[in-house]
Length: 353
Image (cartoon, rainbow, N blue to C red; front, side):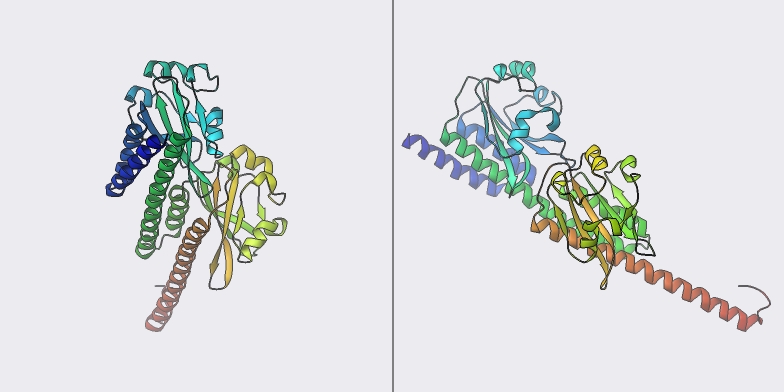
């Protein structure tokens, strides 16, 4: 047993070195799946990542599996109890997938020559981001040392994915700043920000709501990933929403599970929309709150400090865009007033400019 563990440790060290040399995310994940297959001497390995809406597991890298098998069909979380367990943090081992009633594609698995399956969660902190799978062609009871190797590699994969996402967030902030400096079209900027918030953070949707002139109702100004029916659910009155009041007072509101939060409004509509978690961040110009930026997750999730910081940075971009638009409108009015005055002086008011 000691020799086996020594061998695994040696393979793991070698694989970590190869991961360090990999140039980009795709290459890193490909090295990881190949290395896992060779280290454990199994048939194959794959990595699937949750899509931006958190509804499907999409293939990102694989070694030892045919293209036909990889294209067998979608892995929808709602219809896959095994992956639901894994995404909750469990390690699931199946000795024979042909005898497992919860296995989603038994015919395709048999044709591919798959017998045993080990599924390990990819997590960043407490947030599930995907699944690493190990496949064998013969019945196999995965040993503790093998599970440790797979778990370690899953952690390495999660780190690589998160590193790529952090780099993408930096590029997103730079892109938005560039857009703000190159256009005075506020709607265009706000739409870019909500799309970037959802896609860059890998969540279902995002929205921006701004206070009306009376400061009583939050009006929708930009959305991404939300249905028309949900957006038409009804007005968002500040006086009736303690959570919005808290956020408008300057504090981000982190709701990890809307079902356990009694202050959440429109509960039935939220449930039908498939929303589980929401993060609210205040939008402020100088010291005055003007609205909210929200992101929505389809899975229960406690948003991390890094995610709150990133969304707060996007909120600052929103405030900058709104302030630029306000200053432009003031300059435009001043210019029109000046033009009117010049024409009256020059033409004695006999004709309009």
